[in-house]
Structures are given as C-alpha cells and as structure tokens.
Amino acid sequence: MAIPRRRSRVTVAAILMIAVSFLADACGGTGSAGGGGGGSKAGTGAARSAHYQVTPLLRPSGRALGVVDDKTPWQYDIVTTFAEEAGRTPDIREYYSSWGDDFDTEGNAFLWQHGQLPMMALVPSDTSLADIGKGADDDYVRQLADQIAAYDGPLALSFAGEMNGPWNSWGPGHAKPADFVAAWKHVHSIFAERGVTNVIWVWTPHVVDSGTTAKLRPYYPGSAYVDWVGLIGYYGPIDGVAFSSLFAPTLHEIAGFSGKPVLIAETGVAQSAGKEAHIRDLFQGAAKAGVIGLVWYDQRKDWPGGKQLMDWRIKTSVGALAAFQVESSRNKFGHSFKSG
Image 1 (spheres, rainbow, N blue to C red):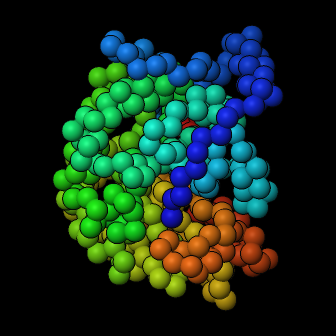
Image 2 (tube, rainbow, N blue to C red; image 1 turned 90 degrees about the vertical axis):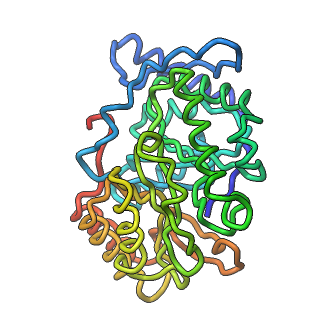
C-alpha cells in the first residue's frame, strides 16, 4: 500500500516550535525523548551512540493503537484527526520514507515528545536490493545511521516492507528472497557498527493470500536481526473479510520460525455494508491472537496494483465509528510506550 513521498522541508515556524519545546524540557529537567540536533554526515568514524536505549520497548506489555499515512512527521493533522475519531491519541505514528532521503531528526522528536512512537517505513523504490546488500549505498546507510543515532528517542524501522508482494519493485519477480535478506542484514550490521541503540527493527511482510503466495521463511533475516514482526493486510474484496482467513494463516506460518512479538503494522477495513462487523472482527481477532498493536491506514486509496478506490477511513459511517471506538477500547488497544 505504501507510496513514498519526498521529504518535506522543515519550516522555520516548526523549527522554532521544537526549539521552544526542547528548551522547556531542559529547564524542567524532564523529557524522556530528549532532542536530537541535525543529522550528522557520513564519515570515517563511528557514529555517536544514541542516548536512548530501545531495549525496554521490545516486549511491550499492552496493545498499541497507531495510525499510518503517506505524509511527513510534520504533517500532524492525521494524528489529531485520528484522536478525534478513535477517541484517543495514537501510540504509533507510521510514515513512509524513500531510500536516499535524510532522516527527519526534529520531526521524529516532535512525534515522540507528543506521545507517538515514530515508525518509519523505508522504501527502497527502484534501488536494487542486491546492490544494497553488496555495499553500493554504504555511504548513505552510514549517514542514515548517524542521523537516527542523533535523534535521542526510539524509532521503529521497517525496511522494504511487503517484500513478498509482486507489485513492489523489490518483490517476487524483481528480487530474490536472498537479495532481501542480504540487504537487511547489511543495513542492520552497519547500524550496529555505528552504535545505533534506538531502533526497533520491524520485519513487515504482507499477509499470504491469493496475490502474495510466496513462502515467508526464505525472506526472514533471522531472529538476531529482527525485533518485531509486522504484518500488513486489509479487510476488503481481495484480501478477505475475516481475521481467521486474512491474518491467522500467516501468523501460523510465521510462528514456525519466529517467536518475535507481532504488530499489525498496516491495516484497514474498506467501506461496505459489513464494515461495522469487520471492524469488530479485526479487533477481537487481533486481541485473541496476542498482537502487541494495530496500526490503521486512515485514508481513501486505490487498491495496490489496481484502480479500485477504497475508503479505509474510520468515520465512513456512524456505525463504523462506533464499532472502532467500542472495540478498540473493549479489547484494550491503547498503550503508551513512554510509560511502558
């Protein structure tokens, strides 16, 4: 579903807003996120280790509720809109970033200070996974690692998500599973060498269905390189309309080779006469499956690879809105990572 956008330039007003926020935190002696400066450039020496240690977040005790869209961290309307519709502010704010873009240190700090765990879906676009694995873009990877280390807060990082989706330039028919694994391990190793301690590595395949039939195990980099498993799947006319058929088979397959916590990293329910029931099924099924959270795609969007417009937004009807609010609360979705 991801469509990467170019990184927006940070406005002077936004920078001043963050500066004031950082100053207030410094004067008060509080603020677990801290503030990163601008991203450091790639160089010959190792990066400064991030102050933030992500280890306490790797096994969350509650279920997070998040939102994802294709806007930058500075475009905060999606958070306020989601909070109004869902009845609570999101715990995770996921966004997309193209391979080659700088990391937005201040924008991610802004999210973390306002209660959202930033989650960046790093999209390789037309960059070859084989080239990444062989080190062709190491200067960029080192620069990105340094920039993320300079941001003194946590970041959930998904690299080349939906790698099993043939609609992606890095999916089946375009790249081999071994290419993906080699690229993932190579990027992960450079981050480790640069002393980055604030990244949660999220491996995010699409659910296995009629359009994504590839076996997932060949794409798995190994538990030493993955912190969370993140599944992507949508309730609609193509993927399915029940948790038991949409997510459960993939969860069963993944359980055969990974014991990592599972986050539903991107999902939504298309508008239909059954949307209210599908929302109830999603939250009840996810809670029963023991996932650590659910990230909602709150937009109208064409189905990947097609021209069929789908409306995934929460507020498409009074019934859908009520079902979302009631079921997310009843199934205890809503977990602050800052207090976790």
